[in-house]
Image 1 (cartoon, protein in one colour):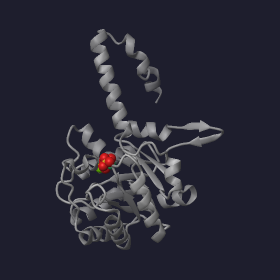
Image 2: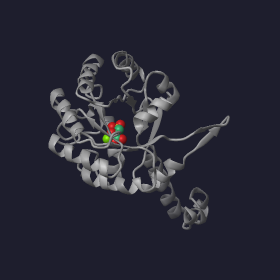
Image 3: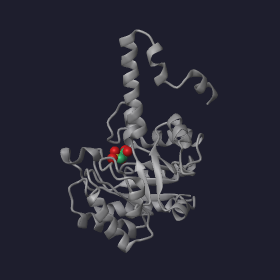
Image 4: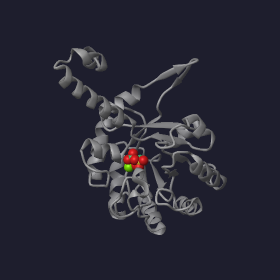
Length: 281
Ligand code: SPV
Ligand code: MG
C-alpha cells in the first residue's frame, strides 16, 4: 500500500494521530488551491504522543501491545496507511511477535530505531545519554522481523539515530547501508538540528547508493523547509510527528483557564466545535 503510493505520488505526508478522533480529523483534513487538493497520505502513531496522553515519559514504559490495540480502534475510522513508531521494537523475540499482531490490526509499516537500553526521546538530544545498539544486533532484529511478514505490503523501516547520538554522517550512513542490506524496506533518518543541512547531506549519499529505497524524515526542529522541498531533495515520506497532540494540549489548557477566569462558558464557545457539529460526526 505505502510502496505503491510512493510509486504514484513520490512524496507522502504522514500526520500524527493518537486516537480515533484525531485520526478522523487527519483523515478529513483537506486544503484546496488552484483546483489542486492537498490531503494527508497516512498516519504516524507516535510513541511521544501515545505516552503523553497517558501522562508518562516517552521511554518505552508504555506497553507496545497496548499501543497496537489502540490502533485497532483507529483502523476502524480511517483507511489511510498507518505507520507505528515502535521505539527500539523491544528485544528481537518480542519484536517478531509484535510484527505479527501489527499486521492483524491493519498497521501498514513499523519503524524501529537503532538504540538500546532505556530509550530516551530523540528530541532530548545529547542532554541525555543516547545509546546506539550494536549494528549487527539491530540488523538481526530487522531480519527476524521480516520473517514474520505475511501481508505483502507490510514494511519494516529502520530509523537511524546516529546523528541524535552525536555520531558523524559517514558513520550513520554506514549503519543505514547495513540496515538496508539486512532487508529494511526504508530508512528514516532523524535529526534535531534547526536546519535541514545534515539530512540533505545524508539524503545525497544514501540516494546515490539506493535511489529506490524510501527515505523518511521528521522535520520537527528544521521546520521552515516545506514538504515539497523535502520531496525534491529525495525524501519519500515526511512525518509531522506530534502536531495533533501539541495543538490540542494548548487549546485545552487555554479553554480550561478561561472558564475559570470568566466563571462561564459563553466567552469561549467560538473556540469550541459546536455541539451540533459533534452530534452529526
Ligand atoms: C515520536 O513521535 O515519538 C518520535 C519522533 O519518535 S521524535 O519525538 O522526534 O523522536
Ligand atoms: Mg517515538
